[in-house]
Amino acid sequence: LMKVMADGVQEHGGRLVGISVEFLAAKARENADEMVIAKDLAERKAQLLARADAVVIMVGGTGTLDEATEILELKKHGLHIKPVVLLNAAGFYDGLKQQFQRMEEEGFLPRPLSELVFFAENGVEAMTYLESV
Image (cartoon, helix red, strand yellow):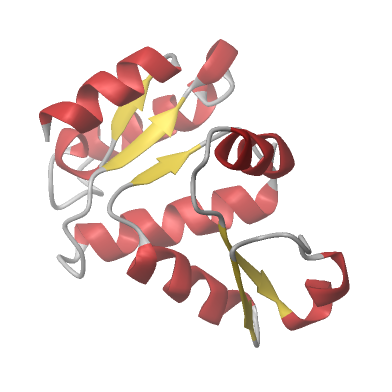
């Protein structure tokens, strides 16, 4: 999915910045406009958040889940105020959304869930939300 997004950015004239880690540096995209190689995953996540105006979490695996929960944890504690969108394409994150809602209902979130993340069912919803904040 990252490759598809990167291809789209370049095909439409956008500036492509990649942030990889040392142990994956050999697989990093060679034709990015800028490629940052972080020493580890923690540094990579910090770089991603520092460079972002907003965060859109797309479908992914455990790395994506790790990044998403860290970003939400930092936002929960007021360490950033950037908009966060969880793109729930084809219901991919229905279970996670349900878990977050349960956390909120049972008092495990000190802020309303709606202040932490916006669940978008498609790209149009995600863009509409981001344009409104």
